[in-house]
Image (cartoon, rainbow, N blue to C red; front, side):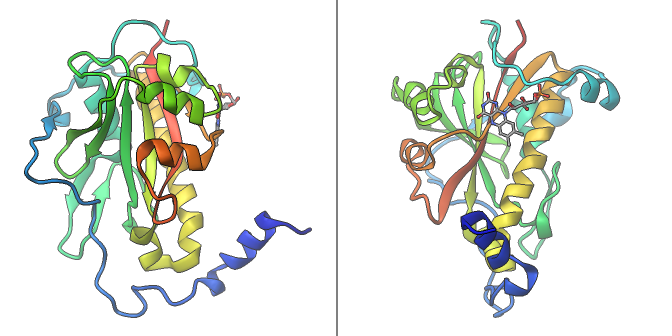
Length: 245
Ligand SMILES: Cc1cc2nc3c(=O)[nH]c(=O)nc-3n(C[C@H](O)[C@H](O)[C@H](O)COP(=O)(O)O)c2cc1C
């Protein structure tokens, strides 16, 4: 068997991890990407105070299906807050530069940032936002009116990226992972993403919403729309969410 996939599997074997920053004794990278501290983020309802749905895990697992048609009823800010909490919520930070979150992550590296294309969320102007996991808040990144349309195009015309309440876009800050695991870290990024999206599926099910995972997209185009360089930071996976019809 030959090809890039095979080369990737070979090059990312444990023994081929290479000398990572961690192994070289370098200081760890920041737990989150920088943001302009002079700006005032939009505070989200505190997860502890949110009382939504009591569906059992078993029921959520058994009912879950990928949903691509959404109701026009907007997501509430509480629902959005809950879903962000369930997918990337920070429960603890440690002095060593780790975060413990509601999802597992290889070595607790938690190398994702969540961007949101908010289309139909009560109280939010449509546009692109960044979730600040450490503050449980949102920062608007791009409120140009064509941002959702550009994202649809980059996702090969999958229209529900625009008709959903919000599209979650998980972007990797590659060094936050490769600092610890070198080349193998690239595998772990993609494994981590699966956990995050599965939590979105199940948490959404519990509150009467539906999700569709999206990995069919033109990487360079999505990265361009999001303003990412595509090498140190790049989109890994998306999940659309909205109220069920
Ligand atoms: C890694 C991954 C990528 C996917 N990408 C897309 C996608 O780009 N577009 C889409 O409509 N569905 C996508 N899906 C959803 C699958 O089509 C769906 O999970 C599958 O058909 C099984 O249906 P179910 O989720 O309802 O069980 C993806 C699912 C996974 C796990």
